[in-house]
Length: 177
Image (cartoon, rainbow, N blue to C red; front, side):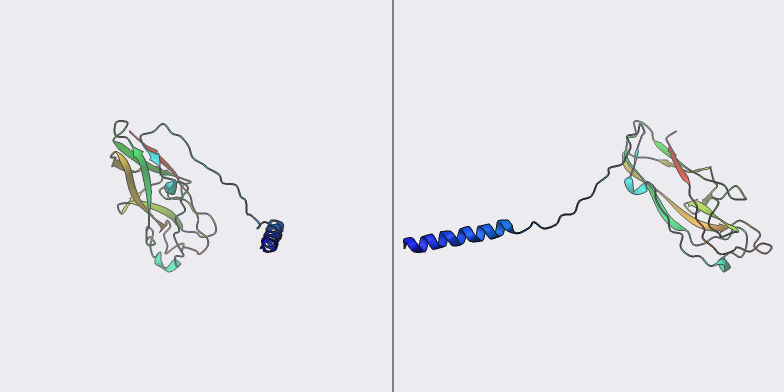
């Protein structure tokens, strides 16, 4: 009986030694960055509304038959968070960028010609630099809905829209009058 116990103890010690000699599994490491800003404002801006990229897709040149013709608008939202109506009761949204040849649209870069980017609010066109919307806000979360589209900015019969990359940008300002 004593010999059996000794053999079991030796076997257990041997197995424990093997397990401790097994190399540890590899690990992965990475940095995690936290970005944000503390603002003195009636509302905050939701993280999913910051630095948005709106994909306008591939649009064929033949849809632009006349100046002002647009591609199908692509919706996007701006979400305000933690709004406090004791600070403000309205929010105004203004989009500013490099103007196109008309001054009303946002200019595009990348090769396409004869178009600019148009922002719309409730289907109504918003000119570059104009207040796009003035929304009454409520306490908590508020969502402002917009859309963007390519728009022909030339007399297409004289100067047709040409194909190419058409990228633009706009600075969104939210003010609380």
